[in-house]
Length: 446
Image (cartoon, rainbow, N blue to C red; front, side, top):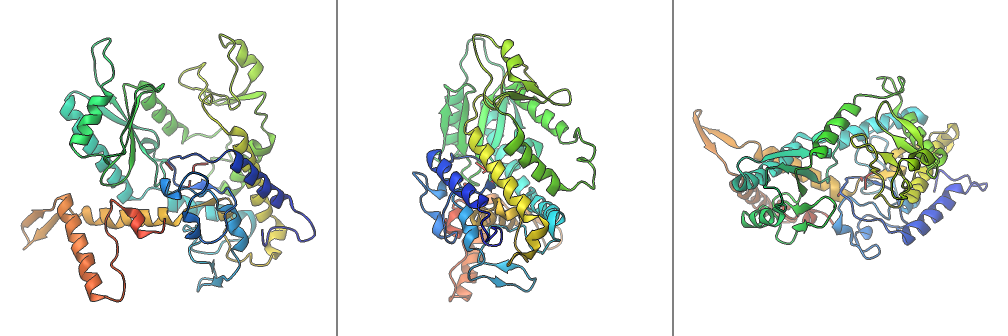
């Protein structure tokens, strides 16, 4: 990696690249629902060249996937230019949060994390769009069961969702004892009201937690619907509470350096944590558990999973039991620790091409497709929020969703006619891919 590898032979990062490539080839990254991703894989070239197939999966299946981005750093400095702010650019750099230069070292990483947080935090238009998705689905549910209570849980409820995260809904409704969950009845109603994309609905009635998975027809937001899962709402409330707490006073201080905290996290869970012998307890302030002690309380010869995390709402339940690839995640954390530690070290400032480069971008990226998707949401829902237009001072014209859609399309067509030398801008929300070359959640989630 230019600017980070010691030319005299410090090739640990190169070795990590090769190790990650081998592991990723053996254990391909699965789909998720996030909006950002730890960098993995070994693809070269521009983002347009990376839109094609990786393994048996197309990038288009997950607009947030950054699988295959790591080695693009190798060519970052090639054919690059410095813009008016002094930042080095190579087309789209996958770091849209970086609009300024930062201080050197760990302080600069802290500053960049603050900008990343500000950029990735939900925009008002994204919040409004998701609320409308929930309302459309809730109307269908209330039409079937007028007394039903529909609640949001998961990342949308806690405010921790990413741009391409799905929405988790739970329906509380009374059924007669012995009745099966009406998953198929709700699925039929959603199709009838054209709330869902025709081929997107999946009913998982045999799963441990039966759910309906769907994609909203208007926004392409993915939604999971379950029934009568009380712990789901409790878990969301618990996470909201934990967002206010931290056992280390210096970590919850307003003056805490988030760069230090991030590197310490990667060091702990990438290098020092003993996954074979140690479990994690969340409740009562949090602590580590001996897996030997945990196993004594487990029935029928069950053993704690490799990533054992005690359910704070249901003691005895291992929330990590269905996880997979924990050791690959550990290796990526180790890689992130090495890269960030090297990037903030005192000698890093002497490296060529260091000025203007992103430190955080060495481990995490946001695809151009996600950036364009967010901009499209912002544009359309800012316009749609003006759902009442005042005419002649006192007359209010209510504009329906489809009418405003046609209005935006007409304006786009008129603009294209007046600028015939340039292609017409895309304004069809149902196909955001049309505005980019190439989807849940990274950012695959950390």
